[in-house]
Length: 412
Image (cartoon, rainbow, N blue to C red; front, side, top):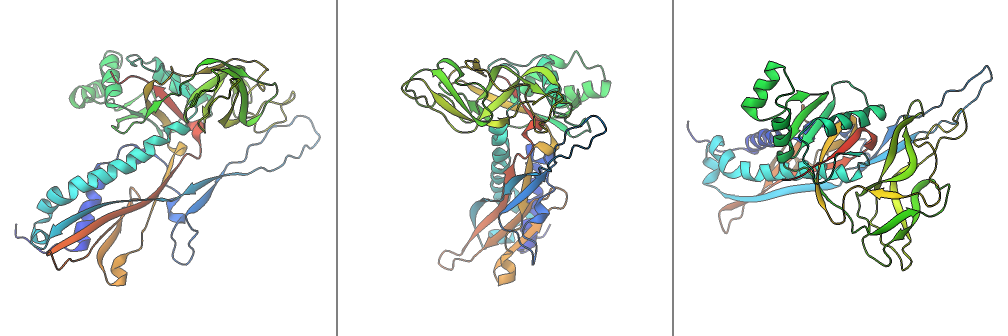
């Protein structure tokens, strides 16, 4: 094949193909909001407020009972511009695209795709539901079935958009442990040939090396609720080891004795303690007190029948109710994820096309994956080289964390 001068369009197209092939988690999340950004003549800035569905309660009897319409919003911010910068000579610009793609583009684009995917998997620290035991390998169905139950109890649809993303070790444990359970011959054949789970127990299974590791806080003491009838996104507690920094880390999950989760539709207890996630690192004072920032907000059922449409727990915590944190002090645990497509969202939007300004470059968007990429370079006459940058602009969000579950496991 004869060599040709590579144009920015050719390079951008090849780079886009490589990026598509290097994404895992990113392929299974919601991408429906990115066309709202950077519209010609109607630009909205860097933040889009996503409207979340209003929640209602059902009234009884003939009398009208008008409810307030409460519409909540989630701010999705596009603020991550990531790029890989390389340099090539004028001679390299005459390579065939296959040579150029393998030698120059593939290493750079693979790293860029990895960063995009890694940023997405780091969102697991905002997920407040957890199953499995930190440090224990999942070689049976128990934890994965429990993840499905947690999603069911959160009114998560069973519509084919549930995914399970595992660490390499967790996938190996799953394939090895489940190989004698599934009797569908095609599934068994795929597991044997590919070493992957495929589709099983209501999930699309994938492996991702970027699954986040969570480091638990230092913990310590016998923590408990300090004061009855607390609600909202902060919880006053005591009983911690006194005057100790970083008792809790962002992403730590805990339960409160006697505070049970309710189904978001029926408002009936699901029989399991509600889990909460720490949203700001916490340290205890000299008396062992600590106020914890949490998600979701504590919102108890009120009255019988219930009059609180936002209710997510059976009751507010009692004074001195024990707090139990998932995991052990300072432990590091991989956080595989079970989730519905609507739990996470990614917006990857167009950067300015420098070719319209007379520069050497091109921008390309993939319609299927919604990835937008820009390539630009400039000639350096003193070295006969072309410094080149490959950019993407994006923002990640977790508008519906109730539709995701962390699956605690082990790296060994």
